[in-house]
Length: 436
Image 1 (cartoon, rainbow, N blue to C red):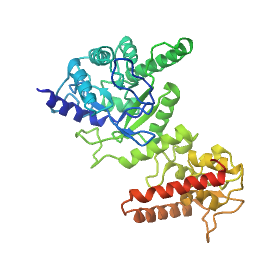
Image 2 (cartoon, rainbow, N blue to C red; image 1 turned 90 degrees about the vertical axis):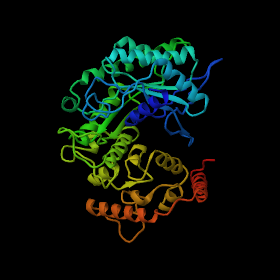
Image 3 (cartoon, rainbow, N blue to C red; image 1 turned 120 degrees about the horizontal axis):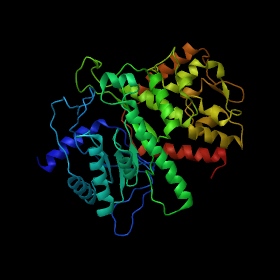
Image 4 (cartoon, rainbow, N blue to C red; image 1 turned 90 degrees about the horizontal axis):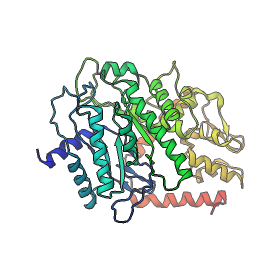
């Protein structure tokens, strides 16, 4: 099999792994080297400055000894198989980089022969890139569950980010769909990576020249919809992983029906809306001060597909509203639907110099379409004929406005009419808040 055929097979096999994103790594180039991991990270994603950044996302091999029912690369599946050699992978990465096709590498692999054998091949490839080719660009590698501790620790010295995919949210799910895997074999390398990062941070405080260890942190992936696990169980697991292992991200991947099996659900397409709701809830966990038991409970174990998680929580907790914009603290403001981190900061800044009304909030860029049902300004509700105050009416109003908004936005956006609006908002922010 020639190299082009291998690339086609192994890049296609890697598309189901979504756990790659901008890492925040700041690995710098060195004299005589090539490549540079920008502070925004290197991946198939959008950088904070709006750049679309790319990496070579590929498997080392798709030949697997495991027979996970949900996986396209399972041992019992009749698909074309291919494997790189370390030399082939290194040459491919360097040549793609020199041609400006990529800015970094995301490397994963199926389990070939054994976890240790696979991890050794990944380590050999990454070590060659760093030490022999002087490649200093971004590298994200998947740690292989069940691999030897020494191999994982050694790999961590050469990469910017590592991830260990949990895939399924419970031990029962693993037994049902991936009986060769165990929760312990997955969690153990996550603990090793966390310990290595903490130790490296302590060494950095003592010795500035201490070598880096996974400076971009670690992440994981959960498959959504392959089992009957509800959103509450998934969100609680994510919350626990953030607290216990200091993960940078938990990625959610809607199950794609790539095979048929009695233990798998019969669906026509991946549950993308459910995946989207979990990402929204994950954002609330990480940046808005929510916890999983607030967003969901045993009575409501799954998110409403019609409403975002924050609006759903607000409607269920209507007794906590309305919030007075001119008095509420930062974390209370964050719990108002339509008010995000930047909006809350703008409100706090503007309140230092003026008492805010609804017109001021509009000028600050606050989205009142949702917020108007949950706030007051100067003790008064939004100035329209009637604002509903009971949960059912608020939900109906939000859904009605969403439908109207969808119909209004069916026209293609114009690139040239976008910027004046942004500039006007920024000018109003400066005028009201006093910020130059």
